[in-house]
Length: 203
Image 1 (cartoon, rainbow, N blue to C red):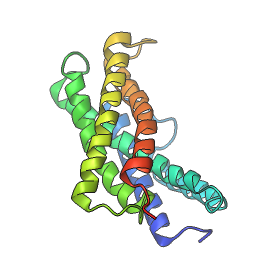
Image 2: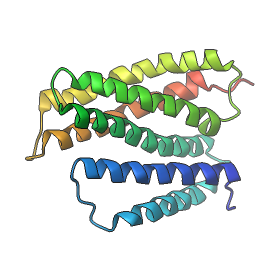
Image 3: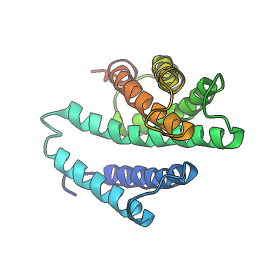
């Protein structure tokens, strides 16, 4: 369909729906009002994602890395929401949104999101590339991701603990802003590392 395989369509729809669920849960946890009926998220995200990939499919043969990055970016949104979902759960159950425990919470949430990232990227973004055995490949993936973890945690901790809440936002909302910013910073590192080192195509 429009240059998309069944695997592409299934992956895009699955990730979009999981994103929608996590957005709904996170918004509810931080008392963030969604400016439209929440049910629309479950329709809008899949439609927008599919349309975006249909558009990009016209360029996939000419700019292969763009197609890969689009898949990586979509998975990145899922990783971000998994990251934030775990982070919010830890904040909710502990009642702690900053201080010395925040880096620990962020490290745990990042680790969970990173495991999710490995399986999606291996089986969809970079599917068929590389020739390493799974344990070796995951080991290298883990090493590259450690760099992303350090960048992610340091960035989030700097925003949350050094800069601190701005614009009258609550510590809980500011913790999520810190987590989102850190995720995007770490995402650039991870894509380069996964593309060049972990899932490098062997010809």
